Length: 294
Image (tube, rainbow, N blue to C red; front, side, top):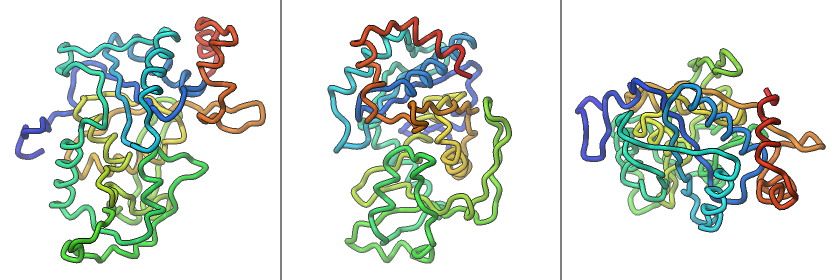
């Protein structure tokens, strides 16, 4: 931020850490499955290879689906798989793990900066689009391109109404980045994605805003996640630019599918780490599989 460090800890050089900082960012909405495991194992290996830091972030912004038993289960499953994380002063960070549900004031500060910069506008449209914004979007069910119905709304239309806030994308602008696995990527704003929600009417930040704030303030230098989030990376780069931050590097992992070719989801209980463990699978079996997976 131009004003330097605020009371919430925003820094001009939030992304200028001199060492590697990666993160694990599971959502406690179900048991981790094999696809999660491979992505997290990849993040762990890349942090180790860089002799860097790996932090754990509990992405529990969804109050209806986030359960404490899944938090305990994911920590247990990650440890069983052989994944560890450490956060310390070596890279200028504070100690984790973190929970998004406890970081609301940081998201609100970023929201206010976007609002004052006129990057966002109040939207009175259906809540259906907003509901999708809370969760990490997937290629198969990515949010539809918003038609711009409320683009000309001004702040004074709000009154006592609860509204959603959307980021106004620069129509026609090409967002480019180089992914460490898939190579050069480019998406056109207004064609590949439209104005997206950054703050919900029920006073919850969207996935897009929360993850940008967290990765910036945690000084993450590389984000490792699934290929279903490639399009979200383009949205998030626009948020980084609007907030005056340098985006991290990205490594998107190919998605794992079941025997029918369907992308793994938390409903695939047969391939959850919990079930695999109960059926006698050893962590070394999975580690060998991951090493030959790319």
